[in-house]
Image (tube, rainbow, N blue to C red; front, side, top):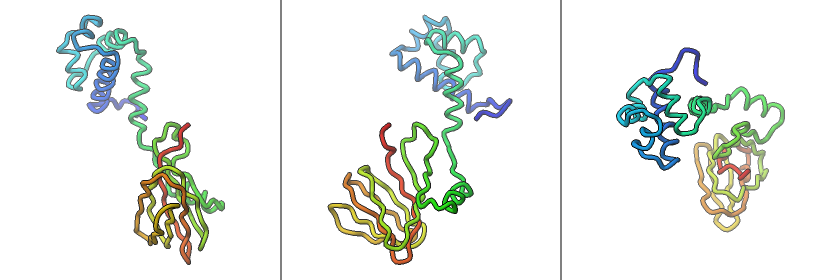
Length: 189
C-alpha cells in the first residue's frame, strides 16, 4: 500500500499508464481526449509517459472526460503497489505444525492467476494431481511423479517437474517422504 507522503516518479508513471489504458479502452486518440478534456495533446502525452507532474485539475479533467472516478484511479495504483503478496515462512510453518499436510500459498488473493501449495507427503502417500498444467519443486526427500498416460519420473530434492498435458495422475512420496511446492493455474471461479 502507498505509504503516507510517498508519491514519487513511480506513482506518477502509474497514473500516466492508467490514464492511457482508460483512453485506449475507450478507443480514443490523444486528440479526442484533448478535445473532450480541454487539455493539450502535448500535456496528455507527458502525463501518460510519466514525464510531468500534473496538477489536480488536469488529472480531474482527464478523468472526467474518460468517465472514470478519481478514487478508481487511486485504487488501481494502490492495487499495483500491492501486486506482491508474500507468504511468510512462519505462517506456513504454523499451519504445518497444526497438522496440515497441504498449506495454500495463494489463499486470500481473490483474483490469483496461479495457485501454489506447500505439500508434505509421507512415505508412499499419494496426492492426486489437478487437471491443469502444473509445476512442482522438490524441497527435500523424493517423489515419484506418475501422470495418467505417461512414464513415471523420480524427482529428488532440488529437482523440478513440469506437467504440461492436462491429464490426471498422482505424486507419491518416496521412501522417506517429501516436501514440495506445487503451482498450477488457479481454478476458475
